[in-house]
Length: 128
Image 1 (tube, rainbow, N blue to C red):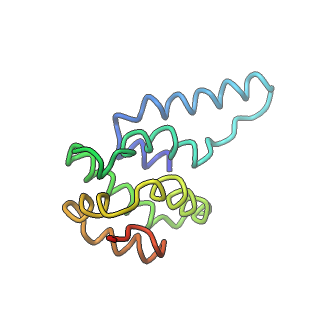
Image 2: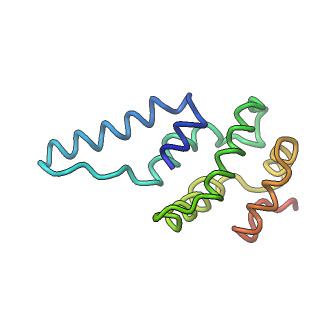
């Protein structure tokens, strides 16, 4: 998720760098090998703050477009940690972005994404 956040959200790169550097410092302090940053850390600290007001305020259309591409890339992800990525996408990214206002904004930018999300996460992005 971190690499896709880096790719789609240049404005989050400073947060992503902080997450990676924090893990490196922890590894140095504990005299251990560094571990990958948890997927949910990227969702909470890099992506979430950018889109938490989706549907509530008028976000930059380009940001919404990039968010849709980010979601599509995660929905298509099939790496060895695919289950974790899908869980984090549903639980930490999409769960807080639900309801008619979000659906209206997404429909304007990428209407096909709504059906993909609903297929993977039944009950999400309902219009009522």
